[in-house]
Length: 194
Image (cartoon, rainbow, N blue to C red; front, side, top):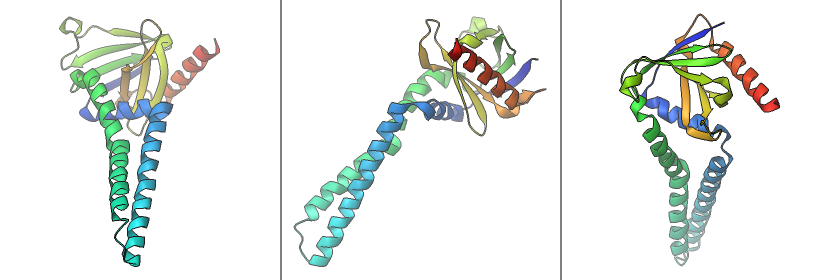
């Protein structure tokens, strides 16, 4: 059985790949949780100090309320926006050349063939030539409402976020996205067992 897919790479796809890569990234999740929780706790302390100083009539603690307010703003900004912006810049450098390209995928039990149908490919000499991806190179897969993401190992066997194929769920012809998910689960389970 051959699974065919046609996907146009959009600007939003970069952010979606970044999110999909972070689904199981423990250090990313930990940093984000620590910064957000620190911001929330600092904000609660700031509000507590402000409310106590307003009702007591003393203004001595307003300085500390301001300090905790600044800490709250910094931690929440860094946790909600700063970490993602840094990651987005890294992903945008890797994938910005793919925006607007339409990719044709032919997926079977042995390999994934990728052709760039329109737009500019990374190498003008490779335009229209198929690129082979073996199932042994697929490290993990993730999905969201619109796409399925296949993260690939480098040629030397190391995993890098810079190699990802994004397949639009609406672009499948003849088969469904569930067929690809079953194939992914089969090969990833097979590679982890042996």
